[in-house]
Image (tube, helix red, strand yellow):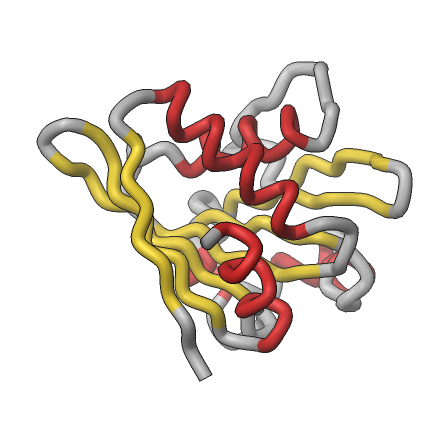
Length: 154
């Protein structure tokens, strides 16, 4: 089962708008989304747009050094993780991983390959790639919940 959707962002503002559209398509349902791409492809920019789309007005930082940033919303928490600095996937246990990855929250995980073997399978994967005039995003649904998100964006 995999539906996919190609998106293109010609600017940071367009990538933020795509994040806001993603927030609307996600709704309140718990989801695990993997964000894959090289440094500077706009993973955190998309997350910032998603959080703004959910009404969050505070600062949105990449959790490169903290590894996890929680955001509280009516209807539940959203966790943004950046595993770039993770040395061993078992470190997720010490970050409260069992609770965070219980399936009850919305989760956005940058650099998920660093947590391989420990992380559950995602509902949706977004691959980011540099293009000459912007960024290409490839969204791939891996579950029915992921498919519902793609349908909501199409």
